[in-house]
Image 1 (spheres, one colour):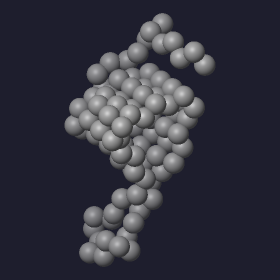
Image 2: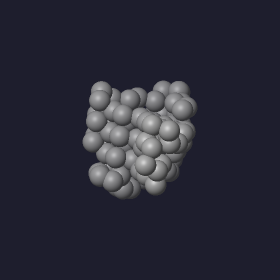
Image 3: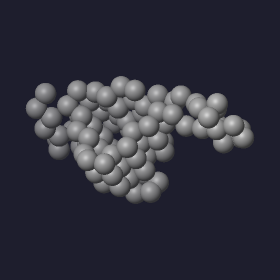
Amino acid sequence: MKIGSYTLIASHAVITSLTHDVNSNIYAETLVKKPVMIDRNVWIGSGAIIQPGVTIGEGAIIGAGTVVTHNVEPNSVVVGVPGKLLRYIKRSETNYGN
């Protein structure tokens, strides 16, 4: 797992990089590692769930309670269950200060 600089993770957010092989009957022996990559200046809202294998691009915002199951493009706002693109953030709207 990689979490970039200046990333904000709110309370009760879950980031997981392990999953089970759903085709196996032996769950304890079939853990599958899928790394999570979170770039810099990302905001992750309260209660959001980031699933294994996801990459979140720089400057993205993940809304509270969102379940992220796929990669998130840089400077995008993703909300809902499952997470869907709400809009892109224009460069002029950002003020990272770093």
